Length: 484
Image 1: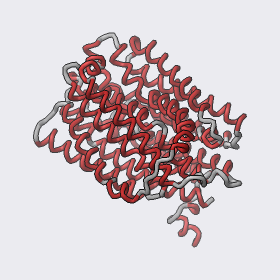
Image 2 (image 1 turned 90 degrees about the horizontal axis):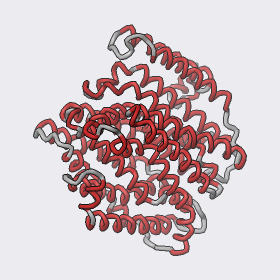
Image 3 (image 1 turned 90 degrees about the vertical axis):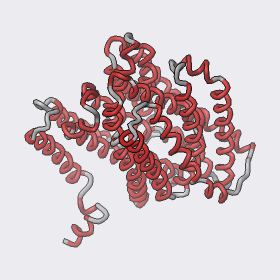
Image 4 (image 1 turned 45 degrees about the horizontal axis):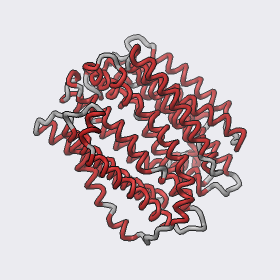
């Protein structure tokens, strides 16, 4: 299918910016975990603060990113009008947010446990406001299929951020979490200026009638987004509130937050796939072969996320050095967090059935149910199990939403997903993971362990090539095989 090739190409571009960017960002993890001692709790503060900003960003964007794609592909409206109306809405929400934060900074910082550091909240409030302002221009780049510009701006942010972090932490010896937030503010502000030329190219027009339609479409997506982001960050918000040892809460959260960074390879793949897939889905909604396309996309998404899962588990003896030695006690939660991220990706793939028939309320209910399960697991078990409850809470929450979306979706708008093939890949992954995960001295950087794990990974790759992705089908390699 030509569109699958387009999806693969765009995913590669978005993925390059996401994966390379995240990889470069990984370089900050050993930097922070080396220069910010575990007992200071500074890394835990950073983890907690970024959890709040992720939630606020969803609130400010109000589901308008997905709504932009829905109405920009509607023949009744011009795409610039759709963008202008959505941007005005998000801009208004952002202005109100900043007024509230600056006007009530003392009570808000006290309620969140940062009474002595309101400056942390002020800096991150401006960061999340600028991120919200940037969200729609970035989405419009995706709609216009300007993947290169999108990726370039994302990469520029990462490179400048890393450079400034090295300067402040290594060269200047500034080791406080304050500088983590300050650097983020500088970089986000800079990237915002790069969108000014794009803003002048827009034919601005606000449409009140369109706004009413967009709000009606987007508010369930907002609930869906809130529930979805809570599934990702609620554990990091809840942890300091319910962990019995308040003095040790930020320390333990720092351990968990640093180890979760290794698991974020799944988030990278899912994000890259989403950036490329979302515009194509809406554009393809009128094609006759759309269900076969959606089914194939789901299968290949799962194949590559499972491959990434096995690679991370297999090469954990090397990957563990991403984080400082004092933080490695939490590495055993990494496979659990990755499994939750895979479920989240599957849920995202399943979500299009209700988006395409304008029944986004289903997504809101599914996500809220999953979120309720996650909250229950975290609140009940964090006091007893610590950050292990955070990891398993994600599996429970995403798993619930995923199953609900599949069961209801197959009744309302059935798609012929290749469940037998998917089950075989999941089974193979489980067996190989068990062999590698319970291998003696699996975290010891020994040649025998790495060779064994690499053989398991190669076996999985060979299975993919033999059953679903023959070398002759690949863009460059395939031409050589066809000539032979």
